[in-house]
Image 1 (tube, helix red, strand yellow):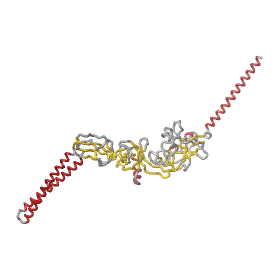
Image 2 (image 1 turned 135 degrees about the vertical axis):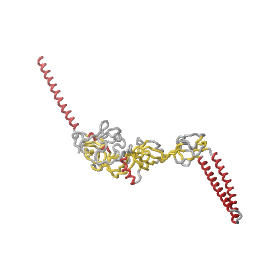
Image 3 (image 1 turned 180 degrees about the vertical axis):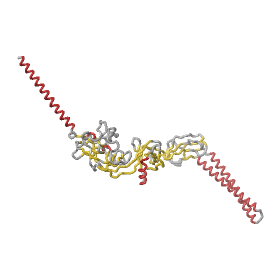
Image 4 (image 1 turned 90 degrees about the vertical axis):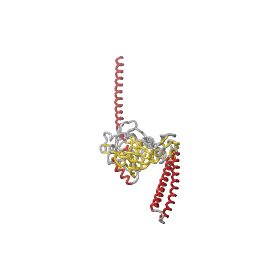
Length: 441
């Protein structure tokens, strides 16, 4: 009986062992099939962001660093010596040309005026008497009753008094001018700074600091630099007409728009750059002297260009390409030729037709023929090609070839700052060419 029970237990253990091995074998086959299915690019749906290729006006611009500077800077000084009786402005006040800023004690110059007027009255009286004597001597000379020498002496005396009267009139004008100088007026429209002297001090023409510095801030000047290699492009654009400039803060906030005034007459050999000066209206005082700014100089506008975001461009062994989403929701590689790169916008000369959907994010997971699903952009305007006036950076025209920085992180797409271009959130690294096993065009 015991032997029979032992045999049954042995058979039961063997059956359980066989069942376990059968289960493990089937599970391994299922896992392998699932892994193979997951590894098949044709079987997995890849979420991507795609936009239609569209024609738009692309501004051709150059960007440089600049400094705002007062259009005019005047150190207000006294032109006469005297005690400062009054300051008629507030520090930081906007003043107009001709406004009275300060008053110098006028009494010494008023006395000089009265003295000059008295001297003129005296000399004019003497001149009238000399003219009467001259008339008498001329009459007597005509009758041969006096010598000609006496007539000539009378003429000389009259002429001398006439000259003395002219000197007196000039002294009166000088005294009046000094009185006018005693009232110090603003020479230009501008904003006053911090005063350099207080009421009651004795001010002189030789004072180096003056009374106050007056700066004209509306309009304001912006001086910026560009590489010397851009000189020909700027010269050709200026020949076609005035060039506009856009001024922004270091963070990209718009501060004003103006017009290019002048290109400096020499290149800085130390830095191989040229200086340019623009005039920008500044009614809200958003620009301030010595403020660092970004300046965008618009050279031209490419009308009706087929433009895409630079994030759409990929680089492979055969050149630049993009992924195009077909009507069957599959991705296909399309070789493209870049006509020029303008900031984060590229203009294509060939390769993509208007209206075709081009992948701008998620290319690192794509294979030719892979199934895709379109996802919504993250954040306002994310995934959209920048419109006119939004492109930044240099406008250096490029022939066919890769756009700068393709296949590398470029600061993140709109709506997801800091993410690598062409990567899903959380995946480090840049978008490279086609993965192993895929053939680039």
